[in-house]
Length: 226
Image (tube, rainbow, N blue to C red; front, side, top):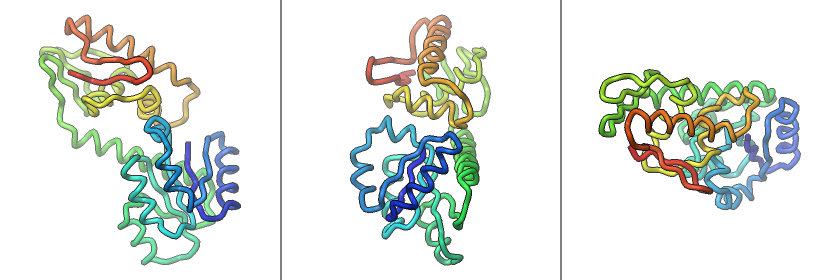
């Protein structure tokens, strides 16, 4: 899901149609309504947002700060004029990328995906291994270890464990986990696949640890307790 913000309804409609042609869900929000829209949005809904596209707005800097308090999704600004100072001001304000109109939706999708890849690699570099008693979770592509021995996991299960461990103590919805693990958006699977992955992961961890380091609550989600 991409959120298109602009003070002109014709612009939001144009980009929403463009995303639709690419098979990507999106929603247009007029600039003056964006603050209240963000306040009303639930955490699980925001977790499904893959990017924000900010067009003509009176306060793009303010919108950027508001977004960052609720979401880490890429923020891309649309520029209608060639201005180095304007571009520098937007990047300094925390916007991830600035593109000049006209720009094809495919380029926006490619830029947003590149931003997510960089963010994901950065998270992997800065995260030290997490140790919970006999379980060690790595964030550099290695399988987790139990008492020093590797527990081989399929890629999706390993990524889920890493994501849960990275957010240790925080309850994560199925939507948040799905969006984090299938962040490329290029796969045709349903969110329910997360339940199957986590069920298999918990069974393997229980078998080796003798306990379950992942808690689940119906209608709430999952959390890593270590």
